Image (cartoon, rainbow, N blue to C red; front, side):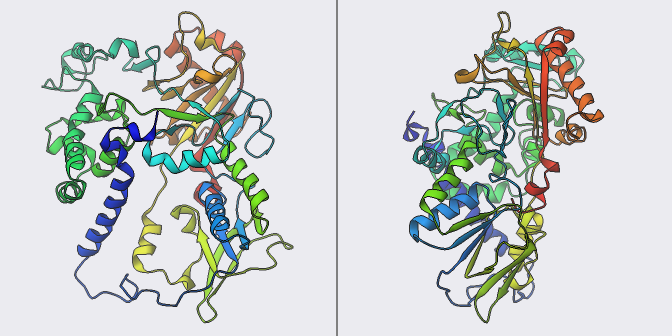
Length: 506
């Protein structure tokens, strides 16, 4: 599929994000509390310290952003002296692959031919215009990708104690029968109304579609209108106040579509996200396809480091180096860095420029007093937060979910039990892969499982293993003793507990 073949709303999604950000920033400044503007609020004359010629450059963070910044600098300024400074023992940041055959993200020899891996971090990428720079980079680095199957009719949905194959719910009329018994007439809590014969995805689409139509007709005018009419609305409050959806119905829509807590975000963000990734709304006859990296997404930072080693001889990579302070000497227009550095490294620690390639949550604990940040910049650093996320991969003796009667090859099942989302290996590796992503959760519920992720062999992880095996047995109608006998290994990861991802530069 060519990136130009998408519905026009999807094709312009990246421009919509840029336009939205500019309008939001401008509106926030206009609506600031009417008091005298302090000196450190952005003005036209902010930070007039003159341009500095590029000397040695420091990049804080060796995630994809930091590595890509180093590549771009070397392409535009060949021979530039660059230091990439990373707090972790590995590159990649939130790109992290675990291989059950003995290799992991920390080992550059991770075999792309081994099928028994799962991506602990980013694992699937929408083949959409907004992701064009990524796929151009993958092509350039000769990184192979394969289709990532998001859903099949053989996948299961299990809610309110009821299990149903997705294939049985493809026809919209199936939802009129209240398949999960959530309406009051069937003992549930959702009141009867005009929504009774519609799926949660359709109800979400009906809330979003009018704004999609506006954006497609006139993006600039539509965003102004949305910023004015939706500025005080989350997805939840909009559906309740403007569409008359009962709160119980909104809870159900959220559970079945975007995940717990997602509709508490700014509604405009949900609309733009739906346009970019086309998760639940049918805006065109061609759904967005998804890709996974052969051998795991960690191939991306590994190949980027390989490129730097070959094409950027003056670029140095420092692992296990935690930056705690960025100091700017305005008189001499130079930066110095302080932190937990091994005694013999970073002997030359003066830079003309410093690039922060870490999330604001990591930047928050780096001392920046001398860097001249204004009030708005400090507020962004303070208010930004990372959402929760946890994954549990399990290796079994066989790929039991592919057996006759189950016939699951790719896609994902979903449930309101502890496992939440179960991801199956996609087409290219399902024949030989016996690894199942037994739990994937990005909702606030993930913090519950995260508290049980205390390392292999711990009492907590044994409890977690038992819970998830029970969920898998229930969801697939497989005897629990069989899964217990087939179980071989488990790797659990809670991103909320990753110090390098949240509390230190990554």
